[in-house]
Image 1 (cartoon, one colour):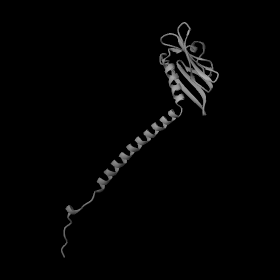
Image 2 (cartoon, rainbow, N blue to C red):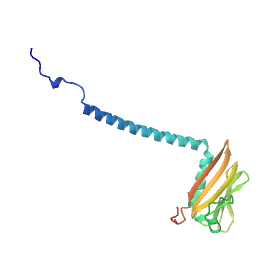
Image 3 (cartoon, rainbow, N blue to C red):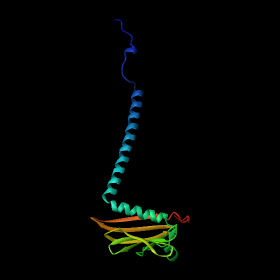
Image 4 (cartoon, rainbow, N blue to C red):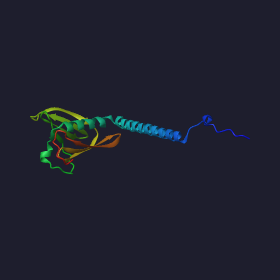
Length: 172
C-alpha cells in the first residue's frame, strides 16, 4: 500500500502566529474603545453635576473670572498671608482702577463694583440662601474661598484661585 504524500496546498486554517497577532490587535482595539467610553461617561457625569445646580456653576465662574482678572486683593496690604479664614468682605482691585467686593448680606452674597473714587457703580445679588461665606490668603495672590448654600441640599463650594495679574512669588 502506497501512501499519498501530505499536500500542504490543501491544508486550510490559520497558523498560531496569525491567531496571536489577531488576538493582540483585537485586545488593543478593545482597550481604545473602553477608554473612549470611560472618558465619555466622565464627561456626562460632569455635565449632569453642572446642570443639577446651574446657579452654583454660574457663581463659581463669576467669582473665578473676577479674582483672576483682579490686580490684587486690597486686603493683602492689611492682612498677612495666613491660614486663618475671615468672613470679611473680599475686596479686589480692578485693572482699570476702582475695586469690586463680595460680601454677605443676610442670606445673600452680594457683588459691588466701585470706581477709583469709591463711588458705587453697580451692586447685585449673586447668590441666595447663603449659610456661610469665608476666604483666606494662602500665599501672595492665591486665595481660598468657601461658600455654603442651601439649595435643596446644603452644598459647599470650595475654590482656590490665583490672581493672574500678581507677579508670581514662586511660593505656589
